[in-house]
Length: 428
Image (cartoon, rainbow, N blue to C red; front, side, top):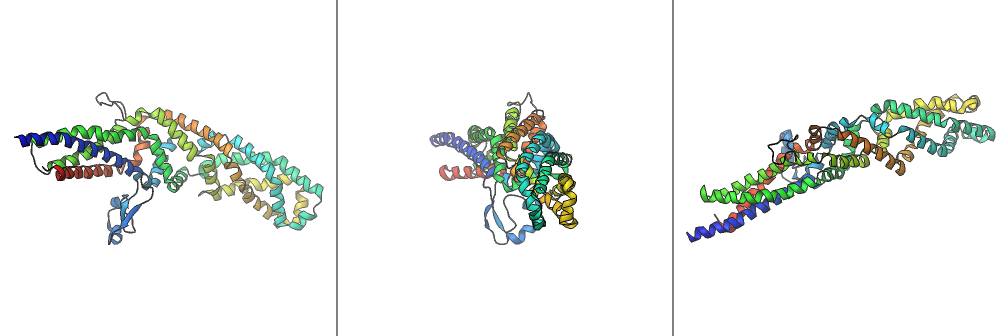
């Protein structure tokens, strides 16, 4: 009897401590599993490379395996960078507005004016470079007044040319930029950005989830002791209860963050914790996207060098070829006669690539970029402010929902380990 009494006190002290600590560790490591490591780390397993193609597709895509025969781990978020970026567009940015909306938000008139200022400083050298390359003797022998007349005419026409380019790009922006491909490419090449996005947005909830592991696990230890005392005292009770606690602690922790979507009177926490902070999160999300993803520099890079960069170049040529004739003005016939029709045509063809080389000077301007970032941030924040809770939760949860079960299994495995460890130290 005394032995039973002592055993009960040992269990009342140690079991809740074990279940509380393992609950905390389960959720702490679960959060780490979401984000770390950025790259896959693992070891080669003999035969896995041959067996990998035979595995179900659902198994192949797990962050546990690689086609080269390695087994290991990569953070769920970085391992799903392409899918998460795609979902971020479909569930988030696509609902916030089209590329045209973003373009108009960036005040294209200001960008055009900035382009004009840069071009005015560069256009003289640019024109001379093109003509000298096509017909150096002609440009050297051309009378100075004629040269100056050509330069003056081009400078005079420049604002009109840039304005025409601005309108043409604005009218065709949805065809020139594929936002989904742009965001996927950006996040895939910078997986830490995706981690930062989730960690900044859900910092408070992730901390809560870690602590919840202890808050839930500790009292469940007393339930486990009650089962041992009043139901059955078998060796498998502790690991089985550990599995249940480890699984449930993760399930409830994640559910409390995202559910219910709409407030429910019967739910103790009324609404998903993340959803309660929608206004605050909106500000963080808008700041992150506007400063790291939908930036003037990234949009400019995509415009000039993205999958539709050839269309952008064709648009530049379409606008600049007639502009060249108009800019040269009365000197056109003399320039044509001196250069020859073919050389003059080649000169006009060379204008688009040379002008496109000025793009980094425009889109890479830090002051202009900061100014436009503020505009985009305000636009995204305004659009997200009217987003319903259902769309809002999809924006954040849909990216990790596919792999949540891995966290639950992880919790069950750690729970079983804790139960076996307690058995090894204290016995049945």
